[in-house]
Image (cartoon, rainbow, N blue to C red; front, side):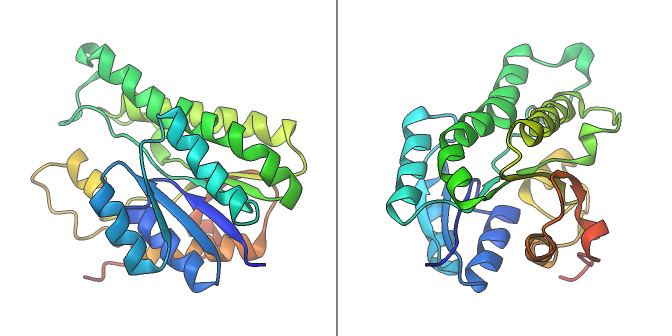
Length: 231
């Protein structure tokens, strides 16, 4: 029976690239995203199963996990879906609080809620939770207060989960800067073509799965050299 993975935010960018790498390794991959057309197109292109929906929607989360269960269980949950928040990135002194709440809901609460549903399946398969984080979680970058705070919270519950669930692997993974739509939104009008494409970074996820280190914080460039300024 093939390994089964759920990759949230799999309709574009790094999520699609990770899904493609997993499919290439004969995984069965379920991807989601809020834009139904984009999800279906990405799933068709990489050979995954597209399930449109918002990770903040309880019914959608249940559908994702039920579909994994129906196909045989779950070996890997990749919590990749994320919200940058307000753009251009405002300083915390004037950050809109309602937007802050939305960022925390998407980047912290939604992934935890999905992980809670996934845990019974992951325990059976001694599977893994892979939470996408950022150096903004551990550094103080001007304008990145809301996003960084949300990723710091994601890292902390990941750290606690790794202690509470010793039978599964929990990795909080910093992939580094990439040439994605979200990264471009953080730097409107700037040239970000010096950042690596997601497709050049995603193979490091396969190397991570092969190496299977203990639960912890992972910087992908420390696993294997990744990326490049290819176009």
